[in-house]
Length: 553
Image (cartoon, rainbow, N blue to C red; front, top):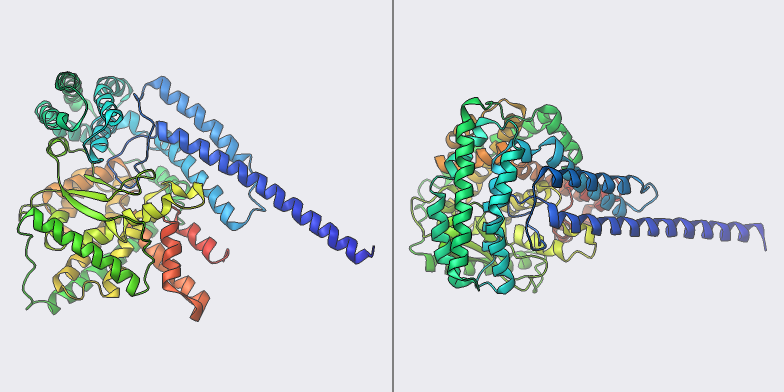
């Protein structure tokens, strides 16, 4: 055997060994991912958001101090397993997966220690009780035996979780406590309305559901009074501070930006949105205004027709592939039991095991008195369909749930998901979807104003430069939007920093990604192929997507 042959054989064996090691470590990473996400499904807190909902095992939940300490131990074990892996020689796609698991672990650390809402925010316990219940009710009824029992379990779990909350909350900010005190006004009557309207859609007996809801109401009123009594002595400061916010950006969101970078990016986009809206309004000054839908049935029918038009538009323009197995984004009247309860985004994006079902968005009767988003939607359903349905959240989540890489089927951070939803709005505007409706284009530009302002509000709330009240007033005046919607937005951003900026910053990252891909690939660049990759990997932070798509450049 010649020296050259021996060298080739040695090189081949060495290469095979490296591949074998990489494959074994990748298998270990996949096992770690499977274990972590099974654990998250059991213990992840409920939130008022809809994108990060997941299929969970049924049963009671525990937020006792002992339970939280056990989660810390579990997290340390997962972190050790993750750090013991060496991704240095892995292909870029597997290194992306490694960083994704790191993001998921950092999110748990964020929840337990950096933004420990379990000990500083009473709203957290409303989310673990009433939001958890409402989330179960967004799945359309009637409910079979198993779902009925889970609904009852979530009602029965309310007293113990609130008791744990009272024990855990050390010195919550007064603005957070005030929100809960106000939100729980009339909660007994609301629960009774929910129970009366709900029981016919379940296998439950009226007596057992009524008894459980009465016990829940007792606990909620007790929690309300407990907080009311503490209000005079609670601190006013709500901000987490700069260090915690930067840690979130670097470790959870995987964003290469400082707070000052975010503010500058948001300000530039605000200027752009205001200017473009002014151009559009001047262009349309002689165009008759849009009209509110006349009734809920015509509204629902119009939404269904326009959803089909959007799917056709995407395919015919070569913008994005729409698989035939993707079901439809539909509107539906809000069930009385969900209307009585509230406390969550009232929609159902389905889930990995329910891909054969339509996505639902529950809507009220159309009216001039509707809040900011629903007033716009009652005039033209396409902006909300584009953001939340197709090609937005519902479409992206369905594609992600079927990703052949199981690590990429899960939610990590809102920047990719909300960035895609927001990007879809202007992408469809530029593609010509709204050419037939000048005032709908104004809606899109006004949505852009809001998302740009969210960056400033998010950063300044986290750094203590805005109070909750100042943030709400700022949104109300500068979007402009109704007082109630502005307050709801400010509360959400104040209690969960790092979420509001994701729409705008995620979109800007996508635009950079597209530009870099277009310049690198030149005439070979294909917009449909780019979008198909972006949407399929829609749970992956955009910086990681670009790194993989452009081959590490």
